[in-house]
Length: 131
Image (cartoon, rainbow, N blue to C red):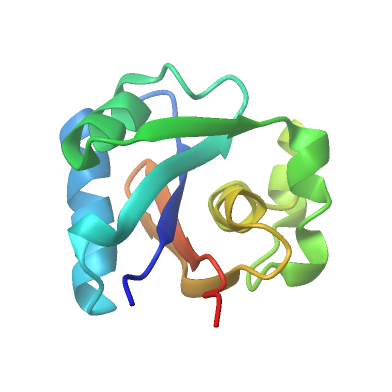
């Protein structure tokens, strides 16, 4: 059965498309996950049009799913690495992990906890498989 993955992506103002695409490919590779299993990129409102987010979506040939900070904050109990500093800045304790989990639904699970590379934060969640 094919895995169904969502990449959660947080980017700084200065993050580049190359940096973001490399980080996404690295995260999948280290976890032994396949590119073709990626169904979407997920991020916070205000970053969907960022060139780094668009570069990752283009690389995988998928769409970008956007959540507001209030929706991402609802995922806090499921985050592996919540950030109080991020909450102070934008109103949620995580972007990459929270967006990936929000996009995969209540039964989704993190398969790659957030990893940072320069101005990019990546996490990967997998949608629950139906039996």
